Image (cartoon, rainbow, N blue to C red):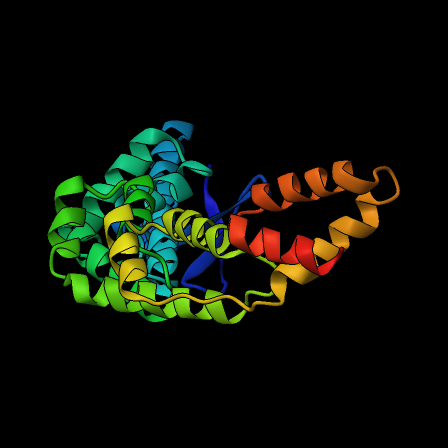
Length: 256
């Protein structure tokens, strides 16, 4: 087979037309590497070699574009390339990216942590889990997280708790505290730090909450119960909602 025509395309690509009217698209680096402007005739075996080299270049350039849009972990790049290329090409691409300095999991960890601190309220345990999912070595994760003082996490916990207290309109004190502990746990904060901040705050809830919740229950339960049985049901439901016995008794006295 012989090349009869070169046509320049975008992104350093050329469309090559052969004497049998078939075409292939190659990077200019491939054309130079195989000296195709001069050596226009070759067999199918040589064509396979050329196409393999072109795929390797394409994989490398695709990985660079992926990294340039956003800093990536090595595992992210591997998974991205594996969608289109075989493992040998992916491995070769990753090795070249490593050598050329485009992959640095320690740098990625530091950048990821800074992003989490500036753009989210996630805690260290969640950040650690997410970094491990991205294939980051535990040593790098611990090394970077240890640079963050507890005071930073405590300040974030305090901010979250203050916001939850301010927006509470339905929960008893106990329910609010339980919800705070549960939510902050899911956000990646340790029980020790959560309790440390909770213990330092004098949390109060609106005294009208029990009347609001009690009246909702009363309207529902009074359709089925009367007298002492109604009071028993109300007391039980309000207790399960986390209200203190004194609060419940005050409410029950108010509806007699």
